[in-house]
Length: 329
Image 1 (cartoon, rainbow, N blue to C red):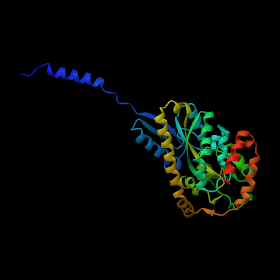
Image 2 (cartoon, one colour; image 1 turned 45 degrees about the horizontal axis):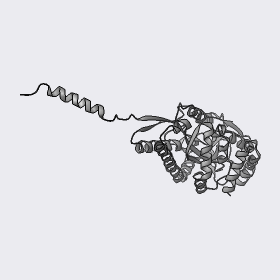
Image 3 (cartoon, rainbow, N blue to C red; image 1 turned 30 degrees about the vertical axis):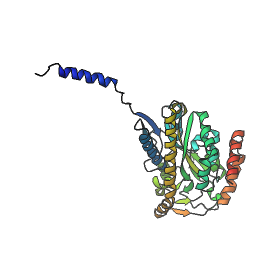
Image 4 (cartoon, rainbow, N blue to C red; image 1 turned 90 degrees about the horizontal axis):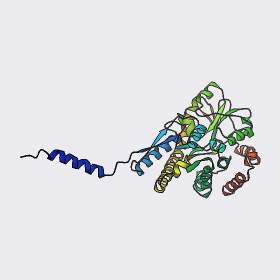
């Protein structure tokens, strides 16, 4: 005869056993902000970083990417990271110089000769000094990804030498260095957040400067006729987090985040460089008139005046700039 108490007793035993098992840990969502759209360099890096973190944490951490400027400009995203309203971002180097003056040395015009030199320096001791310098503003620098070398576009006329820049109204990032650079080159620099398609289309500004991938992804060839391969500044991104938030993570988790950021950055940089020739060919096919060999010496000579600017008078900044210039000779 069946024991009428067997089922309830079995259920009680299972409940008791369940209470002794370790609880399943909930996934922690980490918010990461970028201003660019899917298909862009920053988005590619953010998605690869999210993939690595999800895999390597065993699902303990999930990176939620807020893209297309949904959280504001890059300056506003950095402010949110400072307040820990947002934990992470992949931000163009330029806006950092408002928060940490040392950062601007990486964007000094005509500093790097090529990508090999970029990697050797930014992945080395000098690059780490830049990442470490962000701590004073409440950031943890994790890795350098990239936009690439920046080039000038405009809707008015071909630019072959520095004199052709005179009077052009050029959109620049919210960066002290970029504003002063284009003022020195003779343009009328106009700081604006991103994107700027409408402003270019309406003629509010004459031109802008960005790497080839950005010009392609945002279809700026539709509203800009002239492209000049000035290569005037190497444009890095910094993969960054809130310093206090990062400091509260366990050591193994910190190392996992740093490794994931560096691996995602390496993946994105390789993608950017492998596709540069294709980007240029696309812009030509879309009808842009390209000056491939401008008088770069004239640009370089004018830009050298920045070294005497008040931006580089701070002894710490000046010393760091000297170290970068010496290393890139």
